[in-house]
Length: 305
Image 1: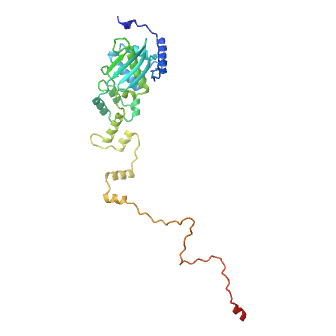
Image 2 (image 1 turned 30 degrees about the vertical axis):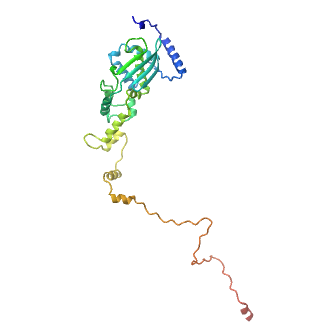
Image 3 (image 1 turned 90 degrees about the horizontal axis):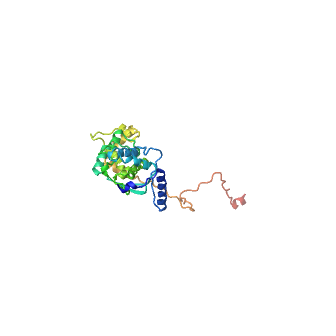
C-alpha cells in the first residue's frame, strides 16, 4: 500500500478555499499568477481549445485519469498556468499545493515545413487561422495524427510533485484541460507551445500567390480578387500601365525625361525703401488735367504799347 493512499480526502469546497488562499499568498509575494477560471460546464468552446481537448481524449493512455482532471479544472484548482516555448508550468491545489511541469517536444522542422507546404495558398489571413475559420481540408490536416500539429503522448513529458506514481495524475490532467481553456482566449499560445511561428503559415500562402500556379499560367483579375478579397478595376488605363511595365522605355527617352527644365528668369524686386530708377531718355509724362503756366511778357513790349 502506497503512501499516497493515506492522503486525507479534501472536499471540493475546501479545495476551492485552499486555492483562493494560495493565490492570495503567492500574489502577496509579488508573483504574477494566471489561474484557470471556467464558467459553466464547458471547458473549451472555440476551435483551438476544443481541438486540444479532443486530441487529449483521443488517446487511451489518458482515459482513466481525465475525468478527475476535468473536475479539478472546473472547480478552480489550477491556480496558475504558464505557457512558454515547449513547456507548461502550473500550480494545482489538491490536498496540498502541487507543482506540475509538462515538456512538449518542439515541432520538427521537416514536419513543420511539410505542413506549411500542404497549407500554402489555403490560409488567407492570421485572424481566420486563430479563429479556426478554415476549410475542412485544412482543419482535418491540423488535427491529423502523426502529420498534424497536436502532440501525441510520446511527445510530452509529464511531471507532478504529488506522490501519485502514475505518469498522468489528476493534477497533470487538470493542467492539460487548463491548456484547452487557455487556448479559448489566446489561441496563438498553441504555436508558442509548439515553438513555431504562426506568421510563417501566412507568409507561405503569400509566397504561393506571388509565385503563381505550378503549371506556369498567370493569375487573372478574377483570381486575384478572389484571393485578396478586393475588386480589381480594369480598363484602358490599366492596360496602358501593364504595357509600360512589360516594355521598358529606351535609354535615350529615359535620359530625356530625367532632364530638369531650365529655370525661367525672374526679375529682381527692388529693395524696400528704394524707388526704382527712371531712364534718362524717358520724359516725364504730364499729368492729365494740369494747367500750363501763363507765358510771361517782357517789360520792353509793355512800355512800347
